[in-house]
Length: 195
Image 1 (cartoon, rainbow, N blue to C red):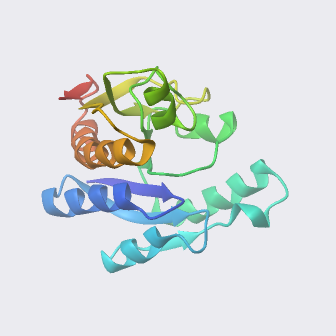
Image 2 (image 1 turned 60 degrees about the vertical axis):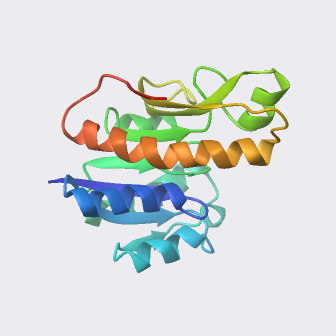
């Protein structure tokens, strides 16, 4: 069974969706959840789900490379086959990404290639988009630019604000990410499209 580690920075709702789906489906084993933020609520959620946790606080390291070396050391004992980024708010160096080439997934709250980076919901609303959504993609050294493994679309409604749109997109993320991971561990790379 493929071993999956998950990197988080916050509340961990996508992490929880992934873990619950793996535990229910038996298609992969969630072996570790790591946060770069000691107070991340997702660490409590992961522990409650019976998943081992670790914290590598990026602020304790003088360079990005030093942080990533400590992160790699924290991951190593769990021997993960796949790394899932789930609200992990650190940009990883090309060197770290290359070590996980083809085995690191990320979820992003826009329909890539639209709106890479931050403030996706504000940007979608400012552009007058009729729909928004989320994308699961393989991580490559260029930010939010890896091959798309799945996308989920949601309508933009009259009167939407960034928080209301974000909440609807997050619901879709919780559906999309587990579905894409199930397919990924089975060797399926064709993009999954959810309406």
